[in-house]
Amino acid sequence: MTAAVPFSRPAYPAPMPGDAERAPRELMTLPGASRDVRRWRLVEVRLGGGWRAGMLTVWRRPPGSAVWVVHVRWDADGTGADQGWGWFLFDPQRIRPLPEPVGPPPAGSPSFGRWQDAVMVPGELAGAPDPQGGDRCWRLAWLRAGGQWRSALVTLRRRPGPELPWIAHARWGEDKAAAWVIADPAALQPLPAAEYSGTPVGSAAGGPAPGADAAIGEDRT
Image 1 (cartoon, rainbow, N blue to C red):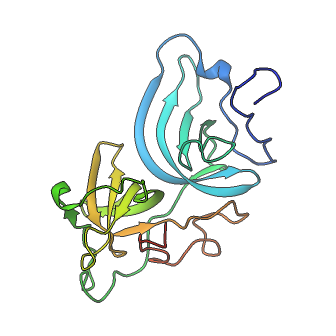
Image 2: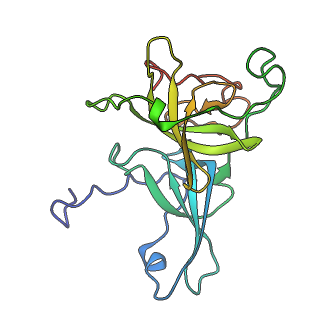
Image 3: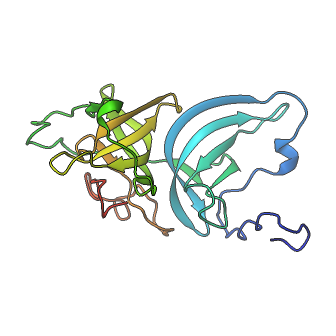
């Protein structure tokens, strides 16, 4: 609760030097129609003095403005004081695209030396949801689909049966594509669930090796 408005949302944490600049309210409420472009892309954003992985979902050009504003989400709603998302003035030094997975594809099954798309699972075979919500998660990930890596968000994971593999429900492609897929690290590579760091997320020093922390399972959420 803020001092000025009872029961309002907490104020955003004070920015640190070099942080991405939040779009001012005056810019976001200009009269007229904004130009919006929906385009999902995994990025790293400078917040709290460190780098954080997030999903850039919308580019916006406010009416009469010469600058682009971007919407970035880095956490589920309501899980932190910063709300887990924000509109920022685009600055390539403070909001950068994350590199796609690199390195050779696995030599063994199912890749056999070639990248394979994620295997889709029909919804009727995904099993029943956990009534307690234990199958819910929120993980940014790279998903292999259409012969290329896609920026994706995993919101559910479960194991339909004790002898069956883990599956995950992922959304990608400007939020217009979604499916259950087998959680195979050769085709679904979640980003590590890390806190802020001083090292860029996608750098050789700070980023994981291809396939690291890739399994979405009971103890990796």
